[in-house]
Amino acid sequence: MTAVAKQLDEDAMMERERRDIVSGEVMPENRLIRFAAAPDGTIVPDVAAKLPGRGMWVEASRAAITTAVEKKLFARAAKTNVIAASDLPARTEILLVARMTGDLGMARRSGALVLGFDNVQRQLEGPKPPKALVEAFDGSKDGKRKLYAAAHRLELKCVVIETLTSAELGLALGRENVIHAAVQPGGLADRLIFDAERLSGFRATRQSSGRPKEKHE
Image 1 (cartoon, helix red, strand yellow):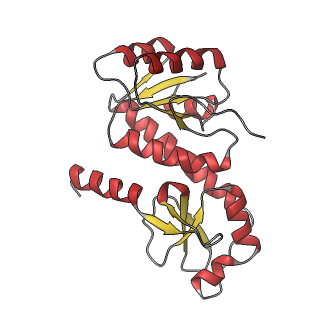
Image 2 (spheres, one colour):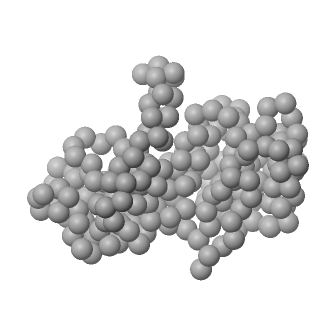
């Protein structure tokens, strides 16, 4: 697949809608997780939406997936006996984190990502501002506020991602205590934004455009 075709495919995925087997609501794919049945009948998360077979879509949240498991909704959707383990929500979260940290690593290797408060601030004020600000949700609020204020002052439409911890960012980027990062426009930024929206259903904070939303208990 060419780079252009791959980007078109990812753009189409972000615009498609599917029906959640729990609520029956039709939602865009950035609010859903696809699940598929393995050959042995075990339900597995398909966070890349590429596994063969009939897909079953569930809202990207711990509560919705737990409901699907407890009420045996995967079997109903598949119209056959399948096995949905109780740890399915946790496994889904782990796979989403792995996908995001992998993309962050690729962004850094390709030169599309900058790290550190000063570098991010310079990127915001430069000729090619970032598409996404990546902030550790357990990082200092003061530094975040300054960067959000800079983006607002410059009238930038950056998407703020706050779904990963400092430790997860550090592991992905090979550095300790990573709090601030920025990703330039492109396919990796788009996919990170897409996956951050899904991961937010498993964590207390959510990604947003412009400024962070407050933590909800």
